[in-house]
Length: 410
Image 1 (cartoon, rainbow, N blue to C red):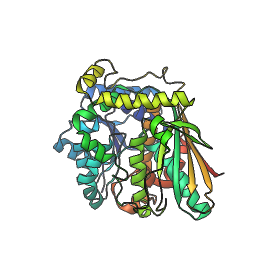
Image 2: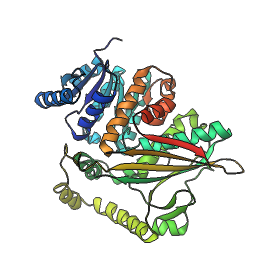
Image 3: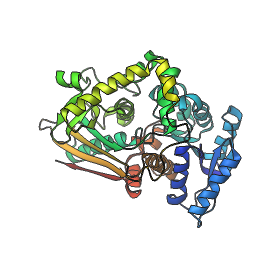
């Protein structure tokens, strides 16, 4: 079908949306037909003008004023091949956008990290999107591209080099960055919107996977010391401790496992765990206990109410000066499912603001979807998929956008 735009960025006036617009305007093809969309025409016009000043050799994007209502979103979805949404919390604002895209066969990418909401969208709209040929990829920002892509790179490398599956991927994260107001609001709102049982159900092992692993494939084993103090050691990754993004990333990696050849690409015995680099055993233990205590406190409504008064407000976040020394460094070790237990190591690194990285990853994912080249996502025919289903083309686009991704056997 002929549509007015290749891509519409919904939420361009928000903190992440502005950074996404900057990457689109500066790095994507000059002949891209795109628009920015939101509720406030004056703010959208100011964004378009700023983009023109930063990139005077490029034409301004179109402007689409839209409320998050079914009729207007249907109209917007029919105008474009793909919508990027940065409007969060997605549990509050994302569902009608997903519905409009699934029904109208419009591709979709977002930057949520709200796993219970993603599960809800899979249950409601996966089959509709697939029937209408809409490729829809949530969690395509810092949640959860680094973990998902590094796992894909390791497992596919082991498959190609050793003709074997991967029994386990252990990932470490080392990040410097400050959360935006939108991210903090999402974390604080999650417990208001979903019951503890809904959150727990969505975060169960392989809860998002379209297929389930064999009964012999249990969760990664941890020693008693690790269970109590949250610290473990890996011969290649060093000393590790609990990581706040582990449950979010694990859900998507395990969905990728099920989507990619029904678990056969990664292997039937695949396991995944994600950790944070620890400076010492003591420091790692303190992180572990702080996370346990912090999650317990967030379950209390008065604590969430108080925190909402002091955090960044939605739309706000660290300045470019604040983020100039920020970075994300992920490393992963994959263990081959062979008698020799060969190991492969990979890294995913980016120097710069983490929200700019999110803008980059969702914009480059959109370009892979729009490119027309064969990917696993296209083979699936549509549906609610994962970053890893964009495969090697996505890995290469990220490399070309100054993300360091490499892998080797060790």
